[in-house]
Image (cartoon, rainbow, N blue to C red; front, side, top):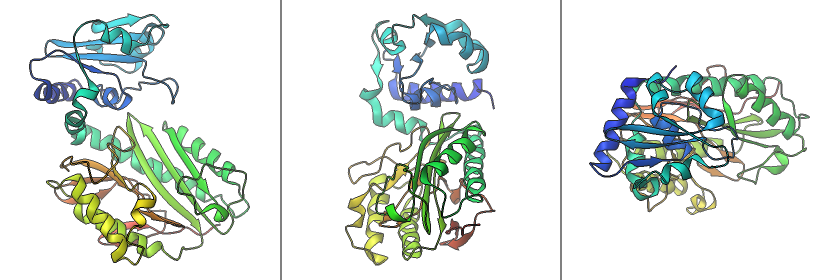
Length: 346
């Protein structure tokens, strides 16, 4: 789906409401640029800085683009009208540095909270892109799981997951795999260990700037699988338009004790939070008071040793819509939502 000039105008209006008639806002981060430019791929290296920067002003945008990337971005990524507003930047100068040197500006860090709020409510085309991304991410995990066995290694599994995502045009930002011998680790970077009787698969995949986050289990059912769904239900019940992020976070953390876990289990790993153009936008804590709005993407990930649940969802006035859903994966209905269960090998 190509960028939309109409959606860019709406985003310009959102930024104007934040910045008023002040100097241009300098957009330099992947999440801000991909949101504002409607899904443009802002990277070459997944671990590197953006290949462009934007001075967003009331009188129009100026795009500072690495000269060796300008032709590709113009031909394949940007709106036609952007071509006339490109300032090529020599490869040896970071575009963000060139854009900052062009004059007074407001840096992203100066209005970080307001900028998050500006991109929190996804537009209809963004929501449609996210639905497609979520569905295909879930399908990739199902396709890979169908060929796994207890003898499969974590790295073989990770390679298959990455390949399935890339084949669908999805950048594999995070691939975690834990076999039965490493389930105590919340962020299990893959090793040569076999999966064994129970394994966890975690992916974060990006397309059109949006990030889908999902966790799946293969092999045996875990002793705490049902209880961790109770914790997740506590997060979901409190994540409604009009609530605050710290309130939803507190409700989900309280659900650990109510579900029979140690009351402080939430302190052993982050719990997720809003997502969208960043893996967590931001990570939820008791100090973050961002508002939950309609069409706000979330990925809560409550966990305990050997137990975890995570999907990307869209919060709307009508309730929670699960985006990372594949009907081929075994599921149960919990608190009114389809929730994944462990998929047996074979």
